[in-house]
Image (cartoon, rainbow, N blue to C red; front, top):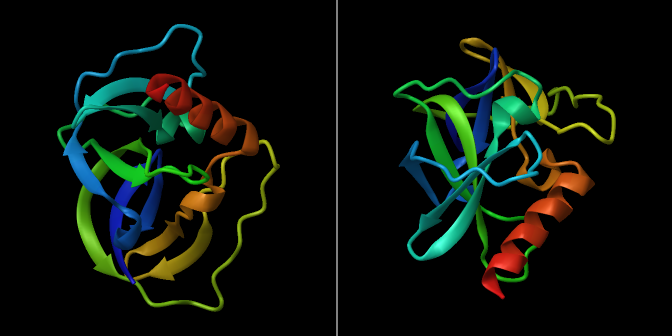
Length: 154
């Protein structure tokens, strides 16, 4: 699998490029009042309102640093009937790597209310997490994100 590599806090993370719509520079985001801390804000992408999840905040690693290598990774929103997009704000988004399927990869144990950063495997540079978009957001967060985009399109 060809994967895009980036950082969430101190963890190296990979995402299958087949799940990515586009990677865009970090842009000015419009913060929403009373939004959860993990929602960095929204921006307009090709006429559509796109909510952006700060992966650092979601994982409890503070805010995503304002680095030149910080990017917004646009992905389809799991559970939406139309192709609604949401953004993943991450740092050090700069590398592609071919990853081998590893049957020995560790599944992360977590509480159900916490984000799931994916299974853990070893690569040439050490430990790497492989993000699964369908499992990333806890159910409550997934519902909030879906409700936000539904409200904006009606």
